[in-house]
Figure 1 (tube, rainbow, N blue to C red):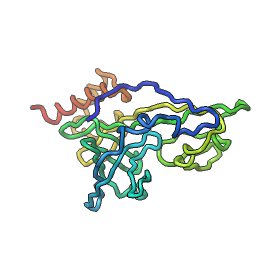
Figure 2: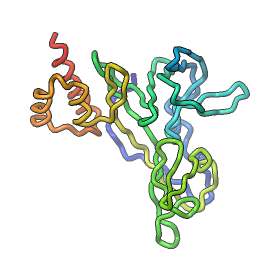
Figure 3: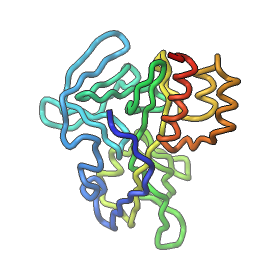
Figure 4: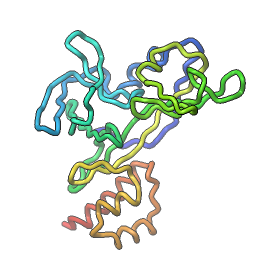
Length: 232
């Protein structure tokens, strides 16, 4: 399991005419330094082995094809979980891929690391993206523009930029319940997962204000919840 780490503002600047995937270092784009042997478990019970890695820029697990090409899964909704070395990832269509960082008896703490595109101003002083309209982040495989258009991120980040762009590394946290359902970390989610102990949880949250972006706060919260459900 990876170590818990607080959010830091790490940024990458891609100058005019540069290609993002060539500027942002491979070791920052990917969780692992190389593609590693892993397994993909599908909802129908099928398990497939492949060389895998998690791409922070696209927010997805990628694999190496027999021909040596790096590819993404076409039918992600069929995926239940992915294991790379000893690291476990879950997927659902609402939250995408999340990486388990800590196991508890009845729940798991997971994170999603992304390299997100910051809104940037063009020469005319207006916010613009590669093709004119504003691009609002790159979580998932598509980017929405201010004019309602859709740009495929895998094409966008492989093209030369028409302006200077700034990317920031971000971490988002999630709870995974005993049924392997993914919940964005929040007071609502923890009350839902541990609904039998709502009164105790409400008092804990009053006495211990939680920053749901701080993994150490989340660890303390889930440790408290573990003691409630298993007081041994």
